[in-house]
Length: 450
Image (cartoon, rainbow, N blue to C red; front, top):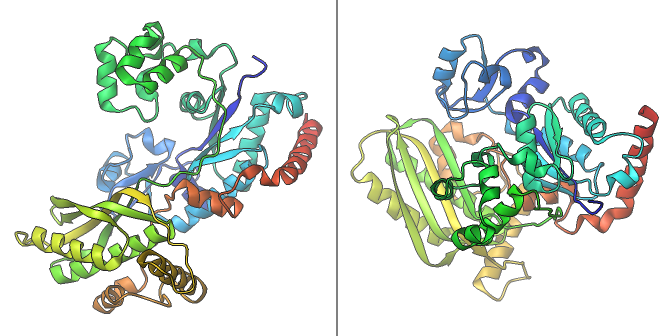
């Protein structure tokens, strides 16, 4: 047991709603949810615990939330605020562990495997994690929950069980902790796998633990073997910082008003596609498949997908195909357009490292996009970019609303999060000496407090 990994999962509770309360202390103690749309008729994207007690849930229409909780407060999304709160939270967390792995804007894992040797001699895991949570609450204003276990999977399950609060699953008690818990709690388990496990009369981790391991391996492959090990408390994995490319990139935008002019809606669509393909190139990715979905003002939808013969990253190719899809879909439509959704998936790596002029098509596009991004970053503003495509310029001429576009949702791939936190996606232990100094300072402070 001395070599057992100790992984802490930290999750900010009701993150978007908690950010709003941190920003407006007068909302403390009131039911709060974040959502909106144009006139407060969109969907709920986050709700605090007080609102959830009245039945307010993510994905619910805002008017339905107001009906259930008439004295609750609707807050429009402030994505820049959420980014700032997220960065402050992770800046605090990185002081407490040599390895920090953020997995989303509001949660991450910390490696505490050797903490009993360096820090926990004069305190307990419960007190230590509680102190971290109190610091985040005091400095950022966010309540957090946590789970400590021998693997990231089990730590996340422990957090879900602890909310709000903290739970440690001590070494040797993993199987006991899991035996009565539903398999539905396991993050990422698909409906097909859940049905297949139900066919084996396995609904809880305890049921899985009783099954032969080879049966699970034959039916589910390596995932089945890992599930069996987890259910039996034998899955003891180290925490690794793996920077992975995203598998999809998309944009889902409600227009400022229901648009009866389909040419204007097409201009907006092409402008969004240009923005997304630029982001693909910045992340050195290209897409093999693309989809367009259009929602009308009666909330009906039509959509279509396209698979490119070769992976694409060029605006001209993407926009030409997208325009064809749009015109084909809208040839039978008659209702005003409410929402446009564009998705790229089946993404592959693209080498667009810029050279002076570039010797290939990809290199020239990479150099051009790199220069455009730098110019807009240095000289542009949200309401006035330094450089725009023809579609983006036409969109602003069509409608004043688009002269100051709203911020996009801050869900970013892990690669971007790590670069923003540490300045690169390199091994975080490259600055191990600096971290050890910070840890020693924290350790002394903890010993003083206890």
